[in-house]
Picture 1 (tube, helix red, strand yellow):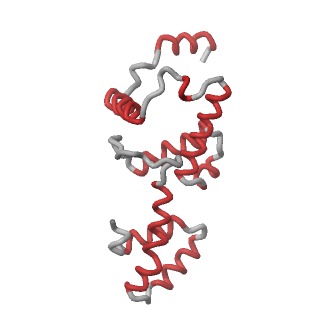
Picture 2 (cartoon, rainbow, N blue to C red):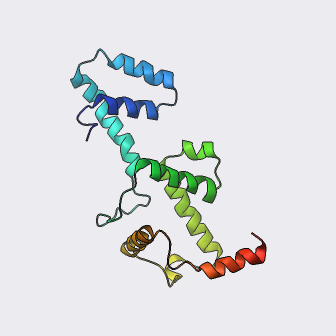
Picture 3 (cartoon, rainbow, N blue to C red):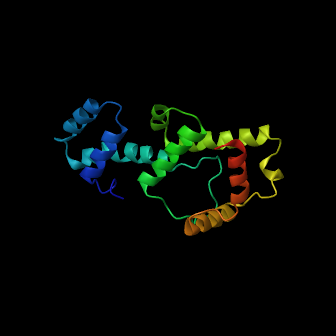
Length: 166
């Protein structure tokens, strides 16, 4: 990992991206310039590693039992999806969404889904179409490969759009 290799571009990018004030980030980076590498490693590797781990933390208390087979997303696409979830589904402003971590967005989205399920009178175990983690991964791969969800009822959707004039 570039962080543990003390890749200076990676270190600078993380510090600048995590800073709440760009001037503080630049002052901090300037202060590091005269330090020996062993001191920079002692100061930066553990805290920056912990910061990056927050972006990868599971959204539930249970760690996954097996490695996921889902194709990883590029960061820009993943952040675009998180932005859509934050603004469109959760109803957050763009500023609130950008200020949240991916873990916070995922946890809020999970809570929103649980809330909507409860309001509609069923628990996840009540759903006849509930998928296992492997089933969800397979379904997502199928949708990605086809470019659309084959289970989506397009005729009913067109009928609703026609009925409500949208």
